Length: 410
Image (spheres, one colour):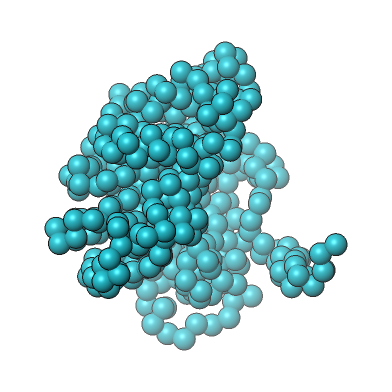
């Protein structure tokens, strides 16, 4: 039996939050309509979802998933390596590669396992992996699994990446991987991709790996992603994406023009080989979402319009936020406790928005992470803005408040 003391302090902290009414996580939704959800019989505006294009409730996507489940069953029965591969998986890989602008792609069961599996395969022990300091946990784990040397650089600073790269090259690594997100999941920042890619000129063994989980379907022409947004698809060596955001499903993929590397990943990625395949219903939902994305580019324009409307409202209130053109709009709060309490008050006033705290963000720099969808209507956004404005003073959410000493909120 494990010693009780191992988990006791953490469990006590969770119980204290529940008893105090400010524990915000694992709330069970009784129903969802996309921009609105039901919890305990209450209907709330959802501004915490990554379903950016609102396709998870589109009847065409739901129907495609249902038909695939009827044809191939509810579960795959094995890994893709063995008996779980279907024609849907192969069709989706071909469509994704063409959409992204690469020669080929390999699907994994989740975005997390895509990063952990691909990076483990690509990097050797003699390599250096240089990651943005705010990289997603799946990137960090993938780099650690690879057993290459992991270095980080200051968030979105190409000059800092260049200095670290120069230092790393002194050790004569066989390859250096520069890993970054296209759209950062917490801040919504766009990667400084042109500046980072410029580092390849003086470092021929530099390999650029782009996690575009939050950029696919959002940035670029018809949602082709952050690399396309910057006109840099050819220069990015590996592009990773997920289906659990704009493509209304679950799963992930890695795309590249290096087909030999992808063949190696297909046969050596431990999460791919030793996990059950993506269910056919999920693959069909992602394929249907791609169809709609290509046929209805106005969805992306609505998403961008909604994000701009929300940002302009945040600025009018004076909230401490920033906007990169992505749907992610973080609201700076500060202390973790204050973020929990603010999330509670938002919930009580009909807004579902969750806090992001350490280690998702630096300690003491908690945020309320809001994200908008193309299916939000103006009334939804106006409701969120009204609630935020009513709470801004209590929680010192304005930029001017962040210049003063914080006060306790009960």
